[in-house]
Length: 284
Ligand code: ATP
Ligand code: ZN
Image 1 (cartoon, helix red, strand yellow):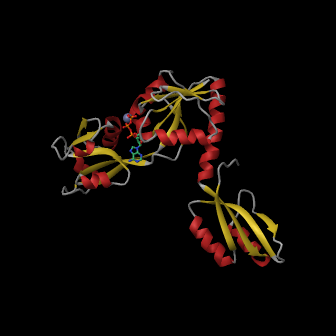
Image 2: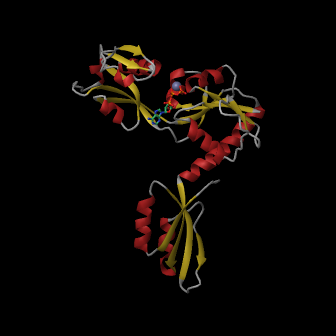
């Protein structure tokens, strides 16, 4: 059986559970104060832990794999392997200063006291940039450190920047981008490796599907060529004749990120009655 550790509660928890469900996994109900749960239709056990403890638990073999933010993976610096980036819990880790402080280059951080919950990532970054600063490690509420005179700068997670703004801080250096990742021990048995591959296959199918949409549209036959060029599809678009002569329906798949541009081009090319439908799973 494969054992995976996930966050007990917090920003990673719900998305992880949703992802498992979308992968078709069904779990026994471990109760409200559960420590673990077991899939009833896959040889998988899920352990609930604090995210900070997950890398060490994988490292010492207590579990085979886990889902954490890249920031935690990097901070803990264990010999783990990233199997897949999962596309949620996207954030960045940045250095911020009180907004009235002038800042031009990274050298301006010399001799400052920087508060953070990520001392290892920060130490590496500063060393790399040749900056000598003092790192003050605190857990939680890092953003209030300058306000209460605990530090002159902070290094912390930023998503929208609104927390920084409300604490009178400005972001001056982005040190890393992060998202949730599935990590595993570099050496797991062949049997477990196979189970992990099976799970990864499902995760990739689910995550791919969220990046694509299924599109159906009607077109006069004279515009089929032009429209097919805009919509290459997975292999090539499906073309089905309509009951009305000289008209066809085209079915294809488009990427979410260039969605609006494609729609505009399709309309210009003569497409009518465009329907766009979410895809649940996508296997290439
Ligand atoms: P735990 O109790 O498990 O130690 P925590 O308080 O350390 O939880 P959370 O705040 O739940 O952690 O964040 C978990 C992870 O989610 C972070 O390590 C980071 O990768 C990501 N994350 C944190 N804040 C944000 C945010 N504002 N937007 C997006 N992702 C975030
Ligand atoms: Zn944590």
